[in-house]
Image (cartoon, rainbow, N blue to C red; front, side, top):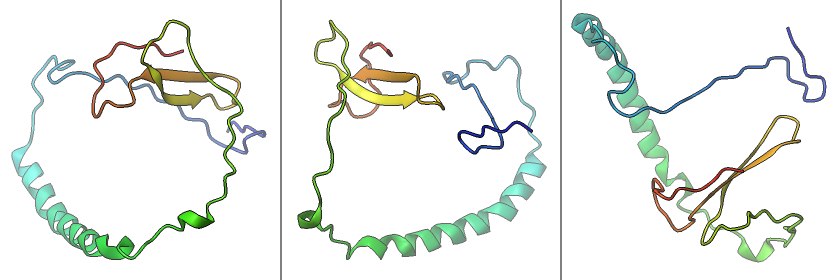
Length: 124
């Protein structure tokens, strides 16, 4: 058992993910047991439908919520500014850092894009 005393974490887990397009990486046909799938769905679907009904009934929970905009304190202060020379019309769209906080990664893109961004931009 590894322990990081600084972070008080007793387990370290890592996973690598690579997205693939539809059909990529499938070299062979996957065998599906239709009977086993049907049995699984018969067991799971009623529970899923029940949970969806509960979630649907809980939607109005925040209908009466009104934020207290007048009580918001202005405690936000810019301490650092991130930019890269030569990037025109691109802003930092995502920030990530490692577990120690020693390395920072910034992804650049367009903030006015909804959905998948087709603009090529760096990660620094």
